[in-house]
Image 1 (tube, rainbow, N blue to C red):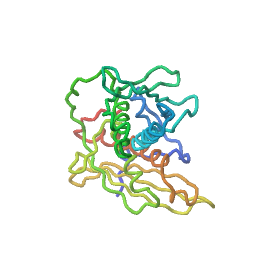
Image 2: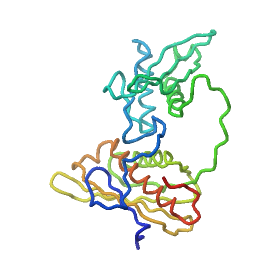
Image 3: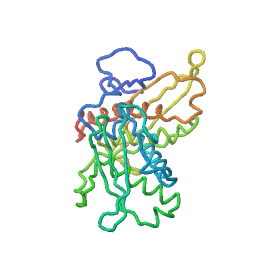
Image 4: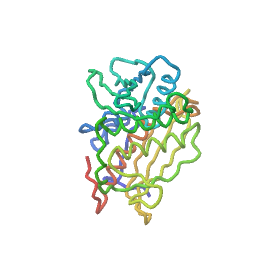
Length: 282
């Protein structure tokens, strides 16, 4: 039996409007100022500028784009729209050490984050594609976390975070199982919870179904149930939206991010309202 108000939460996908209700969460609302690279819906794409015209610079730029996409951050090589963030870079050998200077600029072209990445010379001159991908992952992680070029201090202790375990998804068309699971994990962690592989203070199980909609459309129905480890259900977040017929066979991309962002807000609300929860509801 499904939970009733106030435990029951309905969240629109942003794909089609549901009936107005004061208790509905707003899936695209982000209060406060989260890190610039951590906003899934209103985030501006990142335009990655190759550090020079060489083939290795282009390969690194392509790898950086893939590293951003793994974090569900839209990115493209070269300039995009005027509202994009811009990531520029250049080689630097100050002090006899070869490195790459990275600088992320906002649409106003003011610096948002910077990072100096030391690299062995042989990696830049003859490194493999795997080496280039590792450089890209390291740089994107540093920039997304707001790490500055001059910062070499040890990281502060990690505060306790409420933990959530996501049950695996299975049977979705296209890359839905992996894309939606990854997007939901990222969206939940952006909201301050920690996703774990085992245990967990709370368990989230997703049930996703696809039924025929209007001509040329499929209706995607999503339900996320939040439970205690003992199996006690705390609430369910329902989402639904129409998508073009056959589109779910393609990469889910932004659709997965849309679903995950709305679902994560509802999950956070259920967890925050749970008896004994230490999570502060936003």
